[in-house]
Image (cartoon, rainbow, N blue to C red; front, side, top):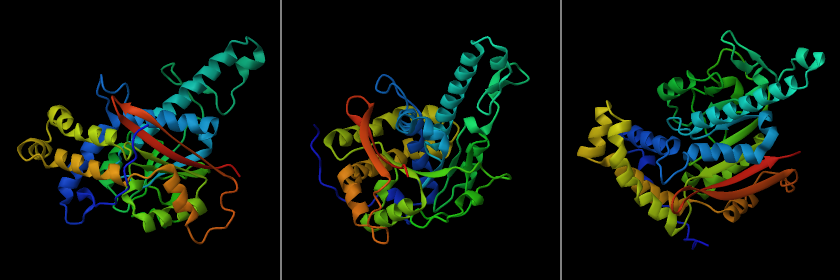
Length: 331
């Protein structure tokens, strides 16, 4: 078992108001790359795919009961990948169900088309016949990244964004109505996502975010790609050489990014320095539960109907691990 280091809430350079916004964008681009790409042989899949699979496993069939609202989305991060992976899996399950029904060879089975059954499109491909087979994701941030979000959302009808600033500690109750979309979303329960973001909150702000979450949502998930141990610190140190080796390929044509990666390697350096601080900021299950117990303004029996799960999975060999803390309101 890895030795747990003490939690220290140092500042992260990329969070500071004095850090130039154009450099912040380059750092966020690096973080998104590390989320959505895999680098064999050290990774068998991208961290985003691993987290999406974990979320599906934890929620099971009930995943279709939720609309997922990502807080502190930055430039988009892993959320567009979550949407693709989860909806792809739901579509494949729907197609499998369709084929299983057709195997029965009865007139009733061949005629039946319930709301979850796929139909053929003009090209003969099977597609879901209803939005009930897909789930929606919403990007939010206190500093909206409209151009990046608009581009990401243009690639999927199930990815949306709120164009106005959203404070995770005081989210508006009508958040669904504020998305950039001409038609309303299906009415589903809100499920909050905090992907590599919860460690940014100091204790007072974390309590405020948890209070708002407990009072207004039906579930939430805190995902981190690091822990407070030496293995995570070692993994973060390797990100510098990794970014130095691959940035020219993934960011070819973005000469400003390459300048700040190779001539003056600010972007990869900030990723490493802030990553080390992130390790020391990351909370354990017990620490998150303690914060919730300290929240004021919620019913004393707030835990009734909630269940909590936590765990970790290795995303990078030999010692990079993703951790999660998930709360689900069953009643």
